[in-house]
Amino acid sequence: MLTRIDHIGIACHDLEATVEFYKATYGFSDVHFEVNEEQGVREAMLKINETGDGAASYLQLIQPIRDDSAVAKWLAKNGEGVHHIAFGTDGTVSEEAANIGGKGVRVLYDEPRKGSMGSLINFLHPKDCHGVLTELVQKR
Ligand code: CMX
Ligand code: CO
Image 1 (cartoon, rainbow, N blue to C red):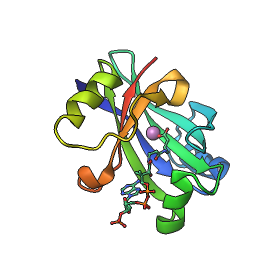
Image 2 (cartoon, rainbow, N blue to C red):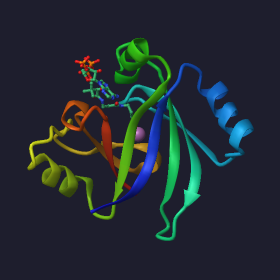
Image 3 (cartoon, rainbow, N blue to C red):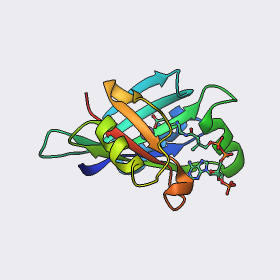
Image 4 (spheres, rainbow, N blue to C red):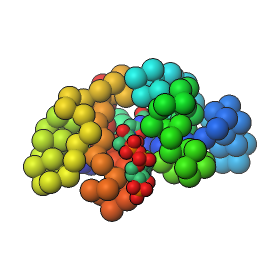
């Protein structure tokens, strides 16, 4: 079952400057930096809320590291802004993807891939989700 918002993904041109904005403006200070080569991004996960089930919600700031990455393409077309939403599951991403895929929504990867902080992720096509690129997240 999808139980929470895991994160909101925000595409940016300058990761450090964008992190600084969120720190200075809102006081979010718990930041985890990571590079995801497969996804072609550098990212910063800013922790927003610690939930009772031990999980948390985040802002995921993402900056492309390659011109041919999905985020680079999106930034060139749209400029900075909200790129995707991510739901956390209490089960496995494979189960969720099979269930949702069975309802006719295109799942982008055949198998879950590596996400932030050891998580497993998959994506649903935005054209099948009323214009929202949707990510499924299974915590480590
Ligand atoms: N949100 C909403 N719509 C989007 C979108 C997004 N993020 N990205 C693309 N689209 C729309 C485009 O606007 C376009 O619509 P129109 O045909 O009406 O213009 C359509 O989808 C096709 O877009 P495109 O620019 O031609 O891009 P592609 O088809 O090459 O790629 C997608 C789109 C979703 C398959 C690709 O972005 C993808 O594989 N995304 C998943 C991976 C990813 O985003 N990784 C970065 C985040 C990593 C992380 O969260 O950890
Ligand atoms: Co994400």
